[in-house]
Length: 213
Image (tube, rainbow, N blue to C red; front, top):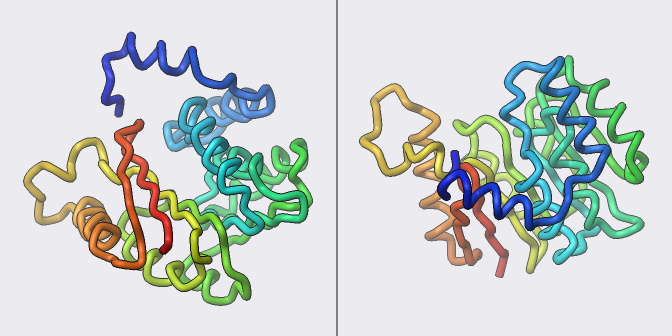
């Protein structure tokens, strides 16, 4: 979803940082071989993730929802030299695809893949994080929040994708629309939790930046 007119959006992208060649290759192969390629973060949002990570300069990053690895590689660009990025996904068929591109990058030995349910995996990770990116099944956003908040360091950042959900968050809620219901609850959680300060950016499908106080 684009909140700007198409021509203005194109101008914004054209005057933002160029997309690295490796990520261009990843995008092409994702569109050729993988279902639902629109799930990619993409050039513009990817550069935004990279910029935020560089500003935070995290030692430890947690990503919930790997897909084909695009966003993980963007976030890794800002990671400290001895940093580690943990990324979690449930799709076994994408593990080798992700690893191929991770290993082509400068961060291959710093990215750890986890296969399975994030709600089961995260409590077993014996570390805290400076940057957490949530971009997985929307129904579980509130549940993800409840298990990550105590693993986020003070001053740490939570990035949450798809929080505007194609505008459905301001439409009448349909009884069977569990994803939108969960996102409404999640957005309310972030707004009302006194441990955070939160800003929603109307970028693509909505990206929230939350900082732990």
